Length: 350
Ligand code: SF4
Image 1 (tube, rainbow, N blue to C red):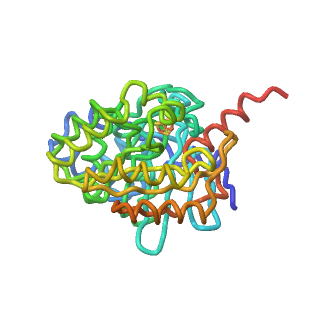
Image 2: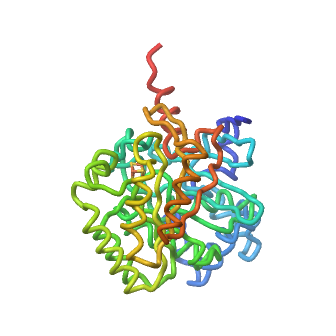
Image 3: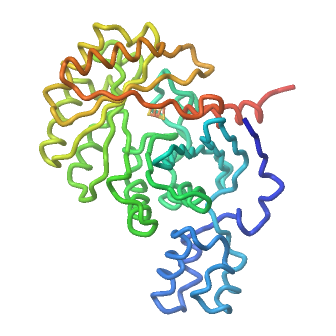
Protein backbone atom coordinates (compact mmCIF):
# COMPACT_ATOMS: atom_id res chain seq x y z
CA UNK A 1 0.00 0.00 0.00
CA UNK A 2 1.39 3.43 -0.98
CA UNK A 3 0.22 6.60 0.75
CA UNK A 4 0.78 9.99 -0.91
CA UNK A 5 0.02 13.26 0.84
CA UNK A 6 -0.96 15.97 -1.63
CA UNK A 7 -0.79 18.94 0.71
CA UNK A 8 2.46 20.20 -0.84
CA UNK A 9 1.07 20.50 -4.35
CA UNK A 10 -2.38 21.88 -3.74
CA UNK A 11 -1.28 25.33 -4.79
CA UNK A 12 -0.37 24.14 -8.26
CA UNK A 13 -2.76 25.18 -11.01
CA UNK A 14 -3.57 21.56 -11.69
CA UNK A 15 -5.20 20.93 -8.36
CA UNK A 16 -6.95 24.19 -7.56
CA UNK A 17 -10.70 24.44 -7.26
CA UNK A 18 -12.79 24.87 -10.36
CA UNK A 19 -15.97 26.83 -9.89
CA UNK A 20 -18.09 26.43 -13.01
CA UNK A 21 -20.63 29.11 -12.06
CA UNK A 22 -17.73 31.59 -11.74
CA UNK A 23 -16.51 30.44 -15.16
CA UNK A 24 -19.98 31.13 -16.56
CA UNK A 25 -19.90 34.67 -15.11
CA UNK A 26 -16.46 35.39 -16.50
CA UNK A 27 -17.58 34.42 -19.97
CA UNK A 28 -20.55 36.80 -19.97
CA UNK A 29 -18.98 39.03 -22.66
CA UNK A 30 -17.73 36.16 -24.82
CA UNK A 31 -19.60 34.50 -27.70
CA UNK A 32 -22.03 31.83 -26.44
CA UNK A 33 -20.04 28.92 -27.93
CA UNK A 34 -16.94 29.70 -25.82
CA UNK A 35 -18.27 28.14 -22.64
CA UNK A 36 -19.17 24.93 -24.47
CA UNK A 37 -15.74 24.90 -26.11
CA UNK A 38 -14.03 25.28 -22.73
CA UNK A 39 -16.19 22.71 -20.94
CA UNK A 40 -15.58 20.20 -23.74
CA UNK A 41 -11.82 20.68 -23.38
CA UNK A 42 -12.00 20.24 -19.62
CA UNK A 43 -14.38 17.27 -19.53
CA UNK A 44 -12.64 15.38 -22.32
CA UNK A 45 -9.76 15.09 -19.86
CA UNK A 46 -7.32 16.41 -22.49
CA UNK A 47 -6.76 19.81 -20.88
CA UNK A 48 -5.22 19.68 -17.43
CA UNK A 49 -4.87 23.44 -17.01
CA UNK A 50 -5.87 26.65 -18.81
CA UNK A 51 -2.74 26.66 -20.99
CA UNK A 52 -3.77 23.35 -22.49
CA UNK A 53 -7.10 24.73 -23.75
CA UNK A 54 -5.60 25.85 -27.03
CA UNK A 55 -8.93 26.24 -28.82
CA UNK A 56 -9.52 29.60 -27.12
CA UNK A 57 -7.56 32.85 -27.61
CA UNK A 58 -4.56 33.34 -25.34
CA UNK A 59 -6.06 36.58 -23.98
CA UNK A 60 -9.04 34.61 -22.71
CA UNK A 61 -6.76 32.00 -21.15
CA UNK A 62 -5.06 34.84 -19.27
CA UNK A 63 -8.42 36.13 -18.10
CA UNK A 64 -9.28 32.71 -16.68
CA UNK A 65 -5.83 31.89 -15.32
CA UNK A 66 -6.63 32.56 -11.65
CA UNK A 67 -9.77 30.43 -11.82
CA UNK A 68 -9.32 27.05 -10.17
CA UNK A 69 -9.60 23.92 -12.28
CA UNK A 70 -11.30 21.49 -9.85
CA UNK A 71 -14.09 21.80 -7.27
CA UNK A 72 -11.84 20.27 -4.63
CA UNK A 73 -8.36 19.73 -3.33
CA UNK A 74 -7.01 16.15 -3.13
CA UNK A 75 -5.71 15.62 0.42
CA UNK A 76 -4.94 11.93 0.50
CA UNK A 77 -4.57 9.11 -2.00
CA UNK A 78 -4.09 5.46 -1.20
CA UNK A 79 -3.16 2.81 -3.78
CA UNK A 80 -4.03 -0.82 -3.15
CA UNK A 81 -1.89 -3.77 -4.18
CA UNK A 82 -4.70 -4.68 -6.62
CA UNK A 83 -4.49 -1.25 -8.30
CA UNK A 84 -7.57 0.25 -6.63
CA UNK A 85 -6.99 3.94 -5.91
CA UNK A 86 -8.92 5.68 -3.18
CA UNK A 87 -8.78 9.47 -2.98
CA UNK A 88 -9.92 11.82 -0.28
CA UNK A 89 -11.00 15.26 -1.53
CA UNK A 90 -11.49 18.42 0.51
CA UNK A 91 -14.27 20.63 -0.81
CA UNK A 92 -14.12 24.46 -0.74
CA UNK A 93 -16.08 24.47 2.55
CA UNK A 94 -13.72 21.95 4.15
CA UNK A 95 -16.06 18.95 3.74
CA UNK A 96 -14.36 15.65 2.93
CA UNK A 97 -15.51 13.09 0.37
CA UNK A 98 -14.07 9.87 -0.99
CA UNK A 99 -13.82 8.59 -4.56
CA UNK A 100 -12.44 5.25 -5.71
CA UNK A 101 -11.02 4.06 -9.03
CA UNK A 102 -11.34 0.31 -9.46
CA UNK A 103 -9.35 -0.99 -12.43
CA UNK A 104 -9.46 -4.49 -13.82
CA UNK A 105 -8.50 -6.10 -17.13
CA UNK A 106 -11.55 -4.77 -18.96
CA UNK A 107 -12.92 -1.77 -17.08
CA UNK A 108 -11.84 1.24 -15.09
CA UNK A 109 -14.75 2.07 -12.81
CA UNK A 110 -15.00 5.22 -10.74
CA UNK A 111 -17.17 5.03 -7.63
CA UNK A 112 -18.38 8.56 -6.83
CA UNK A 113 -19.89 10.15 -3.73
CA UNK A 114 -23.15 12.06 -4.11
CA UNK A 115 -23.38 13.63 -0.65
CA UNK A 116 -21.01 14.68 2.14
CA UNK A 117 -21.76 11.93 4.66
CA UNK A 118 -25.16 10.27 4.68
CA UNK A 119 -28.34 10.47 6.74
CA UNK A 120 -29.41 6.86 6.12
CA UNK A 121 -27.38 5.37 9.00
CA UNK A 122 -27.06 1.83 7.63
CA UNK A 123 -25.56 -0.19 10.48
CA UNK A 124 -22.73 -1.77 8.46
CA UNK A 125 -21.55 1.43 6.73
CA UNK A 126 -18.77 3.76 7.90
CA UNK A 127 -20.35 6.72 6.07
CA UNK A 128 -23.57 6.11 7.98
CA UNK A 129 -21.73 6.96 11.22
CA UNK A 130 -20.80 10.42 9.89
CA UNK A 131 -24.34 11.76 9.42
CA UNK A 132 -25.26 14.06 6.54
CA UNK A 133 -23.46 17.38 6.06
CA UNK A 134 -24.81 18.42 2.65
CA UNK A 135 -25.57 17.44 -0.91
CA UNK A 136 -22.79 17.61 -3.48
CA UNK A 137 -23.35 19.80 -6.53
CA UNK A 138 -23.38 18.32 -10.05
CA UNK A 139 -19.91 19.81 -10.69
CA UNK A 140 -18.53 18.35 -7.48
CA UNK A 141 -19.81 14.91 -8.50
CA UNK A 142 -18.59 15.12 -12.11
CA UNK A 143 -15.16 16.40 -11.08
CA UNK A 144 -14.56 13.18 -9.14
CA UNK A 145 -14.69 11.34 -12.45
CA UNK A 146 -12.71 14.05 -14.24
CA UNK A 147 -9.94 13.75 -11.65
CA UNK A 148 -9.37 10.11 -12.60
CA UNK A 149 -10.12 10.64 -16.28
CA UNK A 150 -7.04 12.83 -16.54
CA UNK A 151 -4.82 9.80 -15.92
CA UNK A 152 -6.92 6.76 -16.87
CA UNK A 153 -9.54 5.88 -19.45
CA UNK A 154 -12.65 5.73 -17.26
CA UNK A 155 -15.14 3.22 -18.70
CA UNK A 156 -17.81 2.98 -15.98
CA UNK A 157 -19.18 5.13 -13.17
CA UNK A 158 -21.10 3.91 -10.15
CA UNK A 159 -22.88 6.17 -7.66
CA UNK A 160 -22.06 3.92 -4.72
CA UNK A 161 -19.76 6.13 -2.68
CA UNK A 162 -20.76 8.37 0.21
CA UNK A 163 -24.40 9.42 0.34
CA UNK A 164 -27.80 8.35 -0.95
CA UNK A 165 -27.99 9.49 -4.61
CA UNK A 166 -31.80 9.39 -4.80
CA UNK A 167 -32.00 12.01 -2.05
CA UNK A 168 -29.92 14.34 -4.24
CA UNK A 169 -31.40 13.74 -7.68
CA UNK A 170 -31.45 17.48 -8.41
CA UNK A 171 -27.64 17.31 -8.64
CA UNK A 172 -27.12 13.64 -9.47
CA UNK A 173 -29.06 13.75 -12.75
CA UNK A 174 -27.28 16.90 -14.05
CA UNK A 175 -23.99 15.19 -13.15
CA UNK A 176 -25.09 12.17 -15.22
CA UNK A 177 -25.64 14.62 -18.11
CA UNK A 178 -22.08 15.91 -17.73
CA UNK A 179 -20.67 12.36 -17.68
CA UNK A 180 -22.78 11.23 -20.60
CA UNK A 181 -22.91 14.32 -22.83
CA UNK A 182 -19.53 15.92 -22.12
CA UNK A 183 -17.29 13.12 -20.90
CA UNK A 184 -18.59 10.51 -23.35
CA UNK A 185 -19.41 7.85 -20.77
CA UNK A 186 -22.31 5.77 -22.11
CA UNK A 187 -25.52 5.87 -20.05
CA UNK A 188 -25.46 2.06 -19.82
CA UNK A 189 -22.05 2.33 -18.17
CA UNK A 190 -23.46 4.51 -15.39
CA UNK A 191 -25.10 2.89 -12.34
CA UNK A 192 -26.94 4.60 -9.51
CA UNK A 193 -27.38 2.77 -6.24
CA UNK A 194 -30.07 3.38 -3.64
CA UNK A 195 -30.89 1.97 -0.23
CA UNK A 196 -34.52 1.92 -1.40
CA UNK A 197 -35.91 5.46 -1.60
CA UNK A 198 -39.23 4.74 -3.28
CA UNK A 199 -40.07 8.30 -4.48
CA UNK A 200 -36.61 8.48 -6.10
CA UNK A 201 -37.11 5.13 -7.86
CA UNK A 202 -40.42 6.46 -9.16
CA UNK A 203 -38.71 9.57 -10.56
CA UNK A 204 -36.16 7.40 -12.36
CA UNK A 205 -38.97 5.48 -14.09
CA UNK A 206 -39.47 8.58 -16.25
CA UNK A 207 -35.77 9.35 -16.73
CA UNK A 208 -34.96 8.96 -20.43
CA UNK A 209 -31.30 7.93 -20.17
CA UNK A 210 -30.62 4.17 -20.08
CA UNK A 211 -28.72 4.21 -16.79
CA UNK A 212 -28.61 1.19 -14.45
CA UNK A 213 -30.29 1.17 -11.08
CA UNK A 214 -29.08 -0.92 -8.14
CA UNK A 215 -31.11 -1.49 -5.00
CA UNK A 216 -29.31 -2.34 -1.76
CA UNK A 217 -31.49 -5.04 -0.25
CA UNK A 218 -29.21 -6.92 2.20
CA UNK A 219 -31.98 -8.97 3.85
CA UNK A 220 -35.05 -10.96 2.81
CA UNK A 221 -37.11 -9.96 5.86
CA UNK A 222 -38.31 -6.65 7.26
CA UNK A 223 -37.22 -7.21 10.86
CA UNK A 224 -33.56 -7.76 9.98
CA UNK A 225 -33.58 -5.18 7.17
CA UNK A 226 -34.96 -2.52 9.51
CA UNK A 227 -32.17 -3.31 11.96
CA UNK A 228 -29.48 -3.08 9.30
CA UNK A 229 -31.08 -0.25 7.32
CA UNK A 230 -33.42 2.15 9.16
CA UNK A 231 -34.78 3.29 5.77
CA UNK A 232 -36.75 0.01 5.71
CA UNK A 233 -39.09 1.35 8.41
CA UNK A 234 -40.38 3.98 5.97
CA UNK A 235 -40.04 1.91 2.80
CA UNK A 236 -40.57 -1.75 3.75
CA UNK A 237 -39.74 -4.66 1.47
CA UNK A 238 -43.24 -5.32 0.09
CA UNK A 239 -43.65 -1.70 -1.05
CA UNK A 240 -40.09 -1.55 -2.31
CA UNK A 241 -40.46 -4.70 -4.41
CA UNK A 242 -43.81 -3.53 -5.74
CA UNK A 243 -42.12 -0.32 -6.90
CA UNK A 244 -39.26 -2.34 -8.42
CA UNK A 245 -41.75 -4.42 -10.40
CA UNK A 246 -43.32 -1.20 -11.68
CA UNK A 247 -39.88 0.17 -12.58
CA UNK A 248 -39.03 -2.94 -14.62
CA UNK A 249 -42.40 -2.93 -16.35
CA UNK A 250 -42.14 0.74 -17.27
CA UNK A 251 -38.48 0.87 -18.31
CA UNK A 252 -37.91 -2.72 -19.44
CA UNK A 253 -34.49 -2.38 -17.79
CA UNK A 254 -32.90 -5.04 -15.61
CA UNK A 255 -32.60 -4.11 -11.94
CA UNK A 256 -29.57 -4.99 -9.88
CA UNK A 257 -29.88 -5.88 -6.22
CA UNK A 258 -26.94 -5.59 -3.84
CA UNK A 259 -26.51 -7.91 -0.87
CA UNK A 260 -23.59 -7.41 1.51
CA UNK A 261 -22.63 -10.77 3.03
CA UNK A 262 -22.45 -10.40 6.82
CA UNK A 263 -21.27 -13.47 8.69
CA UNK A 264 -23.97 -15.02 10.87
CA UNK A 265 -26.40 -12.17 10.10
CA UNK A 266 -27.82 -12.57 6.59
CA UNK A 267 -25.76 -15.38 5.02
CA UNK A 268 -27.68 -18.58 5.87
CA UNK A 269 -29.02 -21.13 3.35
CA UNK A 270 -32.53 -20.23 4.45
CA UNK A 271 -31.94 -16.55 3.74
CA UNK A 272 -30.54 -17.46 0.31
CA UNK A 273 -33.78 -19.31 -0.51
CA UNK A 274 -35.87 -16.43 0.86
CA UNK A 275 -34.11 -13.66 -1.05
CA UNK A 276 -34.33 -15.68 -4.27
CA UNK A 277 -38.05 -16.28 -3.77
CA UNK A 278 -38.59 -12.57 -3.20
CA UNK A 279 -36.71 -11.53 -6.33
CA UNK A 280 -37.72 -14.31 -8.71
CA UNK A 281 -41.16 -12.84 -9.60
CA UNK A 282 -39.42 -9.68 -10.85
CA UNK A 283 -37.68 -11.77 -13.56
CA UNK A 284 -35.40 -9.05 -14.95
CA UNK A 285 -33.04 -8.95 -11.97
CA UNK A 286 -29.48 -9.71 -10.94
CA UNK A 287 -28.41 -10.24 -7.34
CA UNK A 288 -24.84 -9.14 -6.54
CA UNK A 289 -23.28 -10.65 -3.43
CA UNK A 290 -20.73 -8.32 -1.88
CA UNK A 291 -18.06 -9.55 0.54
CA UNK A 292 -18.07 -7.16 3.52
CA UNK A 293 -15.02 -4.90 3.93
CA UNK A 294 -13.81 -5.19 7.49
CA UNK A 295 -14.25 -1.82 9.21
CA UNK A 296 -14.22 -0.54 12.77
CA UNK A 297 -17.89 -1.59 12.84
CA UNK A 298 -18.81 -4.85 14.54
CA UNK A 299 -19.57 -7.01 11.53
CA UNK A 300 -17.55 -9.69 9.80
CA UNK A 301 -17.66 -10.85 6.21
CA UNK A 302 -19.14 -14.23 5.34
CA UNK A 303 -16.41 -16.66 4.26
CA UNK A 304 -15.67 -17.34 0.58
CA UNK A 305 -17.25 -20.80 0.84
CA UNK A 306 -20.38 -19.40 2.48
CA UNK A 307 -20.74 -16.78 -0.25
CA UNK A 308 -20.34 -19.42 -2.98
CA UNK A 309 -22.91 -21.70 -1.30
CA UNK A 310 -25.31 -18.75 -1.01
CA UNK A 311 -24.84 -17.95 -4.70
CA UNK A 312 -25.43 -21.59 -5.70
CA UNK A 313 -28.76 -21.66 -3.82
CA UNK A 314 -29.94 -18.37 -5.32
CA UNK A 315 -29.11 -19.59 -8.82
CA UNK A 316 -30.80 -22.96 -8.23
CA UNK A 317 -33.88 -20.95 -7.25
CA UNK A 318 -33.75 -19.37 -10.71
CA UNK A 319 -32.28 -15.91 -9.99
CA UNK A 320 -29.07 -14.65 -11.65
CA UNK A 321 -26.50 -14.12 -8.96
CA UNK A 322 -22.91 -12.83 -9.14
CA UNK A 323 -20.24 -12.46 -6.52
CA UNK A 324 -18.68 -9.02 -6.65
CA UNK A 325 -14.90 -8.91 -6.67
CA UNK A 326 -13.71 -7.26 -3.49
CA UNK A 327 -11.49 -4.36 -4.54
CA UNK A 328 -8.99 -2.44 -2.45
CA UNK A 329 -9.40 -4.49 0.72
CA UNK A 330 -6.06 -3.21 2.03
CA UNK A 331 -6.91 0.49 1.58
CA UNK A 332 -10.10 1.08 3.56
CA UNK A 333 -12.03 0.97 0.28
CA UNK A 334 -15.36 0.44 2.03
CA UNK A 335 -17.45 3.56 1.71
CA UNK A 336 -16.68 6.22 4.33
CA UNK A 337 -13.70 4.53 5.95
CA UNK A 338 -11.01 6.88 4.67
CA UNK A 339 -13.04 10.01 5.51
CA UNK A 340 -13.87 8.60 8.92
CA UNK A 341 -10.19 7.86 9.60
CA UNK A 342 -9.29 11.41 8.50
CA UNK A 343 -12.00 13.01 10.68
CA UNK A 344 -10.88 10.85 13.62
CA UNK A 345 -7.27 12.01 13.18
CA UNK A 346 -8.30 15.67 12.91
CA UNK A 347 -10.50 15.52 15.99
CA UNK A 348 -8.27 13.27 18.14
CA UNK A 349 -7.35 14.89 21.46
CA UNK A 350 -3.71 14.14 22.35
S1 SF4 B 1 -24.78 2.27 2.78
FE1 SF4 B 1 -25.20 4.02 1.43
S2 SF4 B 1 -27.24 4.73 2.09
FE2 SF4 B 1 -26.47 3.41 3.75
S3 SF4 B 1 -25.45 4.84 5.19
FE3 SF4 B 1 -23.88 4.08 3.75
S4 SF4 B 1 -23.78 5.63 2.15
FE4 SF4 B 1 -25.73 5.91 3.24
